[in-house]
Length: 169
View 1 (tube, rainbow, N blue to C red):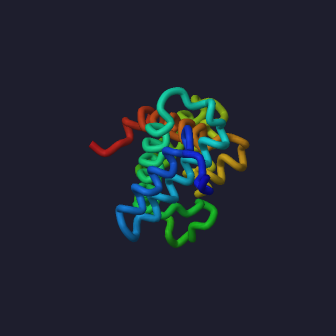
View 2 (cartoon, helix red, strand yellow):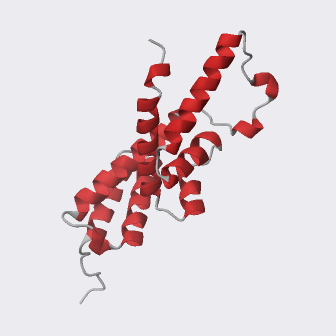
């Protein structure tokens, strides 16, 4: 008998197949391998049994979503926490009307935030005003990254609806 290993079964066989596929794409495709590793880690953290259906499809889709997230993070504008903004960089009000408008807008934002559940409010403030990443927020609040993402999406949609009247026409 030879010293060959038994064939891999389950999700691990698909992981190897997908890693090989990313490697064939050539140099510079490290993001794909990293996203696949993140997907496998999520799979292990949440338990393999939590996946119902096709593990290969789960890994492939999760990896694709991870790549999209990485691309979005790179394309995103830099976020600077509000307490680190230099006063000279703040916009100057030019008229009493613009001051009133800014106050109304801030009040509408606060009212929209208060309509949300507490966790949605906290995630929004941590991300948009304090400049924390979703991973940092998840660690800080004891939530999964996916829950942080869901809370953020809910908050952004809700606030966008409520502040629609303030959007330029």
